[in-house]
Image (cartoon, rainbow, N blue to C red; front, side, top):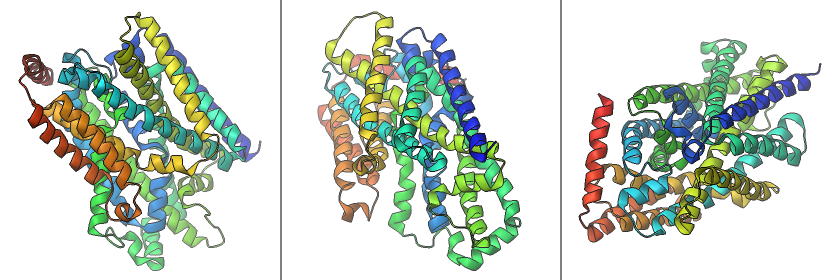
Amino acid sequence: MTDTTFKLIAIIIYMAAMLLIGWYAYRKTANLTDYMLGGRSLGPAVTALSAGAADMSGWLLMGFPGAIYLAGLGEVWIGIGLTLGAYLNWLYVAPRLRTYTQVSSNSITIPSYLQSRLKDRSPFLRIASGLIILIFFTFYVSSGMVAGGVFFESSFGLNYHTGLIIVSLVVLAYTLFGGFLAVSYTDFVQGLIMFLALILVPVIGVFLTGGPAETISTIREAEPTHLSLFAGTTVAGVISSIAWGLGYFGQPHIIVRFMAISSVKETRSARRIGIGWMILSLVGAMLTALVGYAYFLQNPDLSLTDPEAIFIEMGQVIFHPFIAGVILSAVLAAIMSTISSQLIVTSSALVEDLYKAVIKSDAEDKTYVLYGRLAVLFVAIVAFALSWEQNDTILKLVSFAWAGFGAAFGPVILLSLYWRKLTSQGALWAMITGAVVVMIWGNVEALTGTLYEIVPGFLLSLLVAVLVSNATYRPNEEIEREFTESLELLEREQR
């Protein structure tokens, strides 16, 4: 068999496994809470790894190693910022959000939680937040589909559209039928594949470059500043990189995992597993870039056309074609895990936050599950249509979508959990402010070159939330009762 055949066999086994997990989850899905939130039954390991896999996407295996390969360890600050943000998110948001969403009408989406938490009688808050999720995530999903098409094109020489169709159909199949459980279980498996690949590639690869000392020596001789954390950086640049961590507080596809975990007590174990996975994966990605840099310096007859493919290239160099195919499936796993997570959150925004808020239908649960599946299909078709042509404007929008979600939802989520006086008007105007500031700042080159747009977006959103809430606050007995009840439940469950 040829090398390509071995690789294709590995990819086919991987995709078949994803479909099998989707079928298993379909058998366990009975109602809307099951479909959108897995019946709040996820264990700590599945919660942690599914959140990590949904979060990192192809950036962990391609973007991050590529940046370090090109510019050196000065690019590590983004990884440091993300790790800090993820840790604080698990520590301060996860336990409280799990109890508060349970106490406040057993909310299963972020917009429905905010409406219930703030006792907003108008549909505007829920509709605004649902629209933000719908718009940003449709483009996000489209970007993932583009990445899947490019993956098959560059790895196997397939036509871009053929690769696009394969990735879209497989992700759509297990997400459409299995819902949140399928997404979480497949993300767990995908997280394991990504983790093992990121550990194996640098550990085995360093033997090809003569060991750790020889690898470091090779890099230093060629480019002494490549191993410096501060070379080529500025104060504003470091702040911007670390500020990526602020985005975690407002990412719907990540924090929805906190709502789905089986109990508050499990969040502690999930935090340890998740942060451990994240640190080791980021270190693996960093070491892959450095080992790859040394390898290509030591083999000048070889050339790397795309620095972002350093992880894939090293996998091909080190391993048997079948294992190299498993390494390729890790890249595909990173892409697919994010697409599926975003599809299910967008589906919930359409059904739970827009349809229910506007139509106020009293249909049976099975009908809503059907609507949820139709919503997944609708969003997937729109995203697929957008990704048929590789449109740069989509990718540019997605590049600051992380900042958009972080600035729009982050301050509101934090205040809703820790400040009794947050009002629906304060939350609404804060979300609008955060989204608008990021959209404007992110499209002005002179501004984006100085500071990452999440910093002004997050701070102004927070300021607006506090000022408007103080101006519109009126005591509400139900809010006070639920706030106190959620804290009491949190205390009981943490014992």
